[in-house]
Amino acid sequence: MSNKIYPIGIQNFEKIRQDGYFYIDKTALMYQMVKTGSYYFLSRPRRFGKSLLISTLEAYFQGKKELFAGLAVEKLEKDWMEHPILHLDLNIEKYDTSESLDNILDKSLTAWEKLYGAEPSERSLSLRFAGIIQRAYEKTGQRVVILVDEYDKPMLQSIGNEELQQQFRNTLKPFYGALKTKDGCIKFALLTGVTKFGKVSVFSDLNNLKDISMDERFVDICGITEKEIHDNLEAELHQLAEKQKMSYEQVCAELKECYDGYHFMENTIGIYNPFSLLNTFDKMKFGSYWFETGTPTYLVNLLKKHHYDLERMAHEETDEQVLNSIDSESTNPIPVIYQSGYLTIKGYDEEFGMYRLGFPNREVEEGFVRFLLPYYANVNKVESPFEIQKFVREVRAGDYDSFFRRLQSFFADTGYEVIREQELHYENVLFIVFKLVGFYTKVEYHTSEGRIDLVLQTDKFIYVMEFKLNGTAEEALNQINDKHYALPFEADNRKLFKVGVNFSSQTRNIEKWIVEE
Image (cartoon, rainbow, N blue to C red; front, side, top):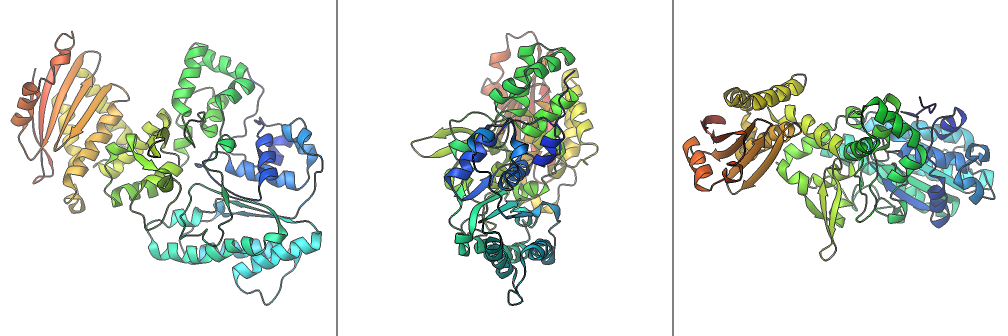
């Protein structure tokens, strides 16, 4: 067995190095960053190594050369200077009142004032911060390093509460603005977060930040590349293959399908999710590790609030301006979903500057769609996975009546608020159900004006389905026959079912289905 100890949940560089945890060397990129600029912003999904990067920079600017023995930066850095460091971690608070942000900022400022002194005339949070930066520089003779982890946590947790967002914005804007006023005292600053709030937001007083979120030079500063896996975990790949009774090639393909696929810029290498990858090697089994650590309820609230057509998610198109900026007033949920790591760049149209987005990998796709089900359908979170299991069994057994009765129960008690968006709601529920069933069977899903047709294939059966809204099940079945939807499958040995389905907006449910065998 491997003797590696994986740093799962450990974000402290010093602890990783002193206690012998496995570490993939990112210090050459860190050094390049330090030597080519002063003010940086980096957006990456959660659990992607942002806190570890901040901690690595902290150790570097503390001059702790011994921690970097054997790493790339040991040969690159000659001076190893110690700088005063102001490290602010906004990850540890729940931001549900305006005081919650003031409290955490006050706590950090008070701790720094004990080190560098306070000035009674500095009453506001931003004035105190500016004063601390000034005194830290004067007292030590070295310029200050400022590291902010999860700068956007207050803004993200208050999505949907415009008043609270405004209060947080009013606090953070001048607070971060202190960096600009004290430029001469600052050596280096990095702010990290999941999302980037837009121009009119928290950064408008800090327009000298270099955003490296979509910068080719730093695409792999967080996360793990395929080359890094083979350079650092080759023996473990063979162990994983043995444990899972797979070939080496199958294990590499499975890892890629499950955890690779993040592209933070067009035409760049894919990045693997580090949290899921390390968990897989630690437990020697595949799992939905990243997805299980967080519940992105704010994302679902955004999708529902803006009546988003879920089917678009897998092939959404947008431009760089939209991808790079989130405004709390925005009606577009896509930037938040992209920056949170549930969508990634799949393609780029150079002529029009348009990005094509999609799910990065199977873990995210399946996890996200599973997560959506209880929010859209009449099923609770506990029953949700079992319901999908039953759907799959019924489809595999050719028991279409049970399947449609179960589907009917998913639409029961559809609230009044979705009646206006009835058609979209019904399509979204169908999309989620058939997407989830599609992880176990083969599904082709097509929508066009006012109708959906769908092909579902198992090892024994083929279902060709047509869905109508406020029509009749007979019309739907006739359309399958008239348009010859089943033609490609007529030579197939499997049993073929043609299914016409009608959804009634009056009853807000599936009104009837008829099947021709």
